[in-house]
Length: 128
Image 1: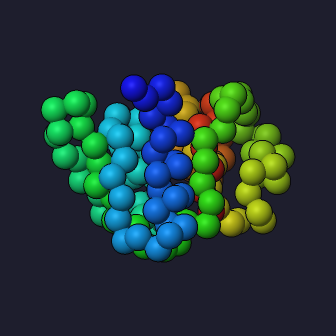
Image 2: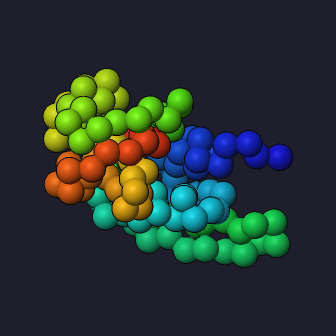
Image 3: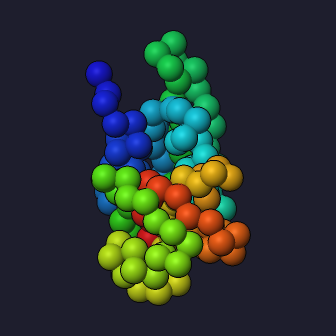
């Protein structure tokens, strides 16, 4: 029984990238779909597709070998549009390297898009 699908998804991708696989299978949910779309837009993963396995489904993800590290941020800290720099310093290795994933009132966004729209939200994860 899975308790934290988001953490399972990030650890599956990180472990598969670490051993050089070209694909992996992650649990499925709407939140995971939106996060995978953000990772795909950022160029960290390739195509992904939903497969119904009778237990809630899963995503087959194509890996490109570009993920050095990724993870869930727990607890889900609240962040305002002015505070992203401090969180970048905490979770990302350098400025303009990697993305923070934020749940906002306008949906799940990367921190760059949230900065452009001047909105804050809750931190979900990071990828670089």
